[in-house]
Length: 341
Image 1 (cartoon, rainbow, N blue to C red):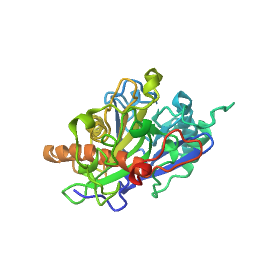
Image 2: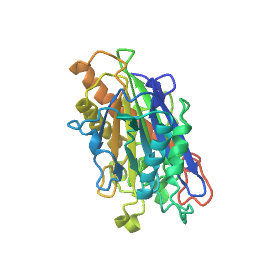
Image 3: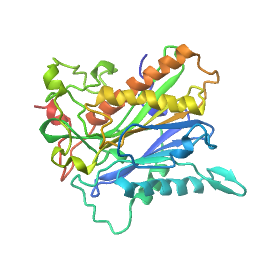
């Protein structure tokens, strides 16, 4: 397996990504926009502190099959308004589930906690609706990584108290040479993306073409590797964490199989972050299958697809951290400070 042409979720044809952020707020929104809602979507939550909108409708037994967009946002519960702004932008474009003469865009969303990150959160009106609209309107196939969109104010555990989180993406072409699977993720984890006090990423075994530095995994001291370098360790009750992502493929899947793919993608969290899926994380993965590959995958192909979901998610997480950049009033430094010292 190898990375796709752009090594982004937009290697899955029919998907675009838009970001919007407020640098003073140190927060933002990322929207995955689907060309049509003729897809199958799912979701799986493994963190203990999730914040979501419209995830129940993605359950296999429920009526709606596909989505118009998926929104990842900062802002904790305030960020749930981002999906409303995205929904209005899509309605203006004529998108949505048809009910009589009305259209209702289907926009599931999830949020991460970035209220305590050095940004100015003294807003009098919720800014996230406007950010959600801007993210949809900015959607293109050119995906910017790092301190953008939902990753703008993200933080993780790690050396020296913690590291800046970020927005990452990656893609993989399966062994058949045609099927694509890709991930998009905003990393704001309780755990650390690097091994011990080092610059080496937990996701190093899956790296493609030096996409996050090519430093390998280094010499791993088991005791050092297992030490917990969690974020905000002095206030663990805050729940100030969450890694939220999307796994997408052009394979033809049922709604149930799409949800199963989201479950498999969670293994990428465990491959790229230590620890993951903690009680104070809101870890969640959405899935979207565009079904451009018209044949239903055989079991061997589904196994390969599920394994790739894990590895591509791990790579996307590491890329988000690798691409993060410093900004005024940051609480934590970006990963580059580990590389340069």
